Image 1 (tube, rainbow, N blue to C red):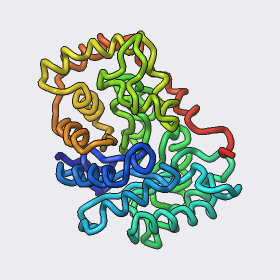
Image 2: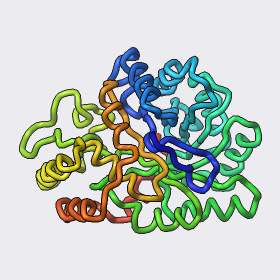
Image 3: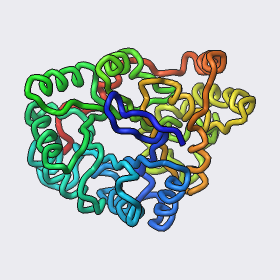
Image 4: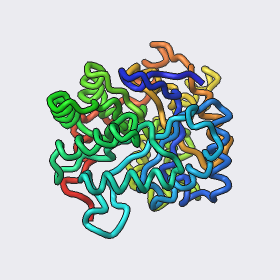
Length: 335
């Protein structure tokens, strides 16, 4: 496993992070989930991504159990706050109240005194940015959070946050966690150039496009049973890629992967890691062998000709519209 700096910070993270967005507490039994975490550790993965909302808080619990007994100094735990975690009006968003209550719940479930990275899971239009950033900064001062970041914020939103942080002496954002893959490149036009300039690293999710880039979804065929496309929590994310024109072109990547001695999944993960602004790529797994397979993408170098061939194959089905990032944050807090 190779390691990269998280943006311009001093924190090193594994090129591949293990994420339990859907795979703990919903799709997979607890024992299997713990086996996946242990397989990640065996592969040299040290960075683990979760969020308070994943599997209705169950994901953090399972990750905490799985990491029990692991030397805390040897791993990096990332979690997030924004989405609803309870029925009340303050059980969501980025208010000071919800941030403080959320981090205390996360620390309890993860069985740790601090998280290495705490990220705003979306932009909250209903809370003053100063309030959110001061709450984050207070958690840093209290030692409950070491670094702060965001997820799916636009370049303008990140710029606003950096301006306030600099003016008020708060710790700066060091990471952004966007969706990014060969098929979904909306961050390349605005977010990546701005973040490169400001020293913010991308911790990208869905590098395999919810499994689409493995080639397992075939044009004209129903999705395989027990796949992301049939999980009610994940089907919304993956459905945008389940068009026959997309699936047909994805099948044409198979010879490229084969020539390189890579699986389709390894090629997809290696592709996002060619972007120097990417600090880590998050992969999930429902079986230990999946994480072992994906971990082999670390350190793979794709030359310019391979990158050109991939662009040629995917061509018109790649989504590049930077405005799609803004649409990831709801205009008001989810009810």
